Structure formats: C-alpha cells, structure tokens
Image (cartoon, rainbow, N blue to C red; front, side, top):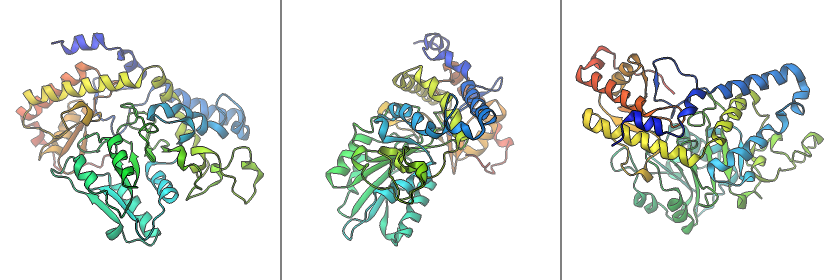
Length: 417
C-alpha cells in the first residue's frame, strides 16, 4: 500500500495547494464550512475594486469584467459544475433567499397538493425558509411541512424518502449532502421517484458543489440552490446560486426585481416587467459585485482541472482519513456512510466530548468543524489538503484522545459557521 508521501507525489492536483493562503503549520479541515482564500480570488476582488476606482459609474459597462453582465457571465461558467445548461443557472442571492425565490415561483399549491416535504436532519435555515414561505401562503407549517424521519439520527434511507411521496405532496426539498453526517443522497433516483408521483424535486447543494460532479439537467431536477463559499472558495457570505430547469422558464418569478429583467430592456424603466429568458429572470436586486468577485478567481482554478478528478482525490482523502481513524482512534464513531457513492466531501465523527475535542484540535494546529450536539466534521479538500495532512491529523487526534488533552477545555460551544 502506498504511503501518504507517495500518494502526494502521485497527486495530479498537488500544485493547486500553492494557490491558497494557509497559516504556517496549520492543517485546514474546515473547507466544508468556509473554503480558504486563493490568491486568484484576492486578485479578482482587488481588480473589481480597482474598476470602481478607475471607472466610477462606467464600471457597469467598461473594464475587463463589466458589472452589468457579470452575474450572467459567471453563471454560464458555473453551469458545468452542476451539470446544467448555461441558461438554467444564475449566480445570485444566498441559499435561503434563493429557496424563497424558487418556492414562490414553482410552488403552486392546490386543495389536493400543498405539502412541502423536507427531512428532519436538514440545515435549520432551509426549514425556516419553508416554514415562513408556507405561512405567507396562509398554510400552517404544522400541517403542510412534513419531515422525513431518520432511523439513526444521522442518515436517511431512500425507501423512507420515497415512502413519503404521497398524493398530497407538491414539492420535496432535500440536501444533496447532509451537513452533519456527510451522507450523499441519490439525487437521480429521488427525482425519478418524485416525478412518478407528480412531485417537483429540489435540492440544496451547499455541501456538494465544488466537491463532486453533478448532472442536474440530465437528472431532470426541477430546481436547486447553493452557496459558493465552501468547496468553491468564494469567501464568507459570497453570492450563492440557483438552478431552475428550462421547462419551468415560462414561470414569472415569484419575487420579481429589476435585475430579473431582459437586459436589453432593463434600463427602459418601464413599469411593465420584461422577464429575462432563462434563470436570469429569477435574480431580484442589484448584484453585490465585491461579494461575487472572489468567485471569478475560484472559477479559473476549477476550470484548470477536472471536477471528476477533484471528486476522485476527495474520496481517496476521506477514505484514508476514516481508515486510519478506525485503527488509531476507534472511540470516535464514524457516522458517515461507507460507500463512495453515499458520501460527500467530509467525514463526521460522533463523540460526547466533540466540542472539547475540536478546541484541542485547534490548539494543536488542526482546524476542524463542530456541529451540535456531538459531531466533529473533518473535510480534507482536494485542492489544498495533502495525504500527509490527513495522516498528521490522525496522529494529532490520537494524541488528544490518548492523553485526554480535551479535558483541559471547557465544553461550552463556540459560535462557528
């Protein structure tokens, strides 16, 4: 079996590590929460700031990246990473605002079908969005938001999901990857099963975009939303994205705004909304140029490799991590599904002292991620994590657990993203 050093020597992505800023001696295992800044992301942000300094108002139409069409230009380049047509993707908003936009556009409840199906393990903001959206429609969330149950508190079973596809369900909204356990759901099978029952299928790709290939158009997914600040490394609070299948493009945006206008007519200032063709119609307000800028640099990096290659390395990194942990630190319960096709880009470990262990890791130079009440998430990111980083992380965890170093820390939970 190849050593970690040998794996690094053979790694076709190893040179990308130099693209990212990282503290000396630090091992960053939190890219599934916030990706690191790349030099090119910094360069693009400074460049867009300079266009404001140089052009003033003319920056909307002048310079290397005119602001007026920047979102559309970036969207066509993001589309391949989610397996969509260029006109089905829009760089805009945030996950939560885009959920609201998609539901207000595509959710058309009837007396027979008005339930939105979610899962009990989903990220809270998605649930809050669905609840508040239902209330705005005059629908009681207690009656019209249904949650798929988990058998073990960490994962979902495909049969349990499909079992909930009843005649009163209008939409199913699920994560592509469960944020705690790292379980990757079967998007294609779920979508097919939903459509067979007349249900629309939407997904939150927060923990999968930038970590693996997608095939949203081919899989016939109705809509999807995501952020770019995790594996896509666009910076804290960076502009998100949405996908809406072209068969729905005739729909007026539920929340209309002037940047959803046909670009040729946007400055006519007519009170009659001229809807843009494609996903651009589902923008709302003026794009935040500086929030989008770092994504330009990130896109360049991803375009220089192959997302399938990124996925392959990610799987090998997480396999090495979990295999070594199982032997060296067995007291940490690995709750991420074993099969490659059922896991995303991180490994989730359950332990009653998870919060204290995470604090000890940070003091030992490893940046992990804690999720209440008892989960340690470790995300070795293909573009900037080496196999030796993984091996060192396991060694540090072994030391922390063997010497019970975590007992030196408070179990008070830090506020983390």
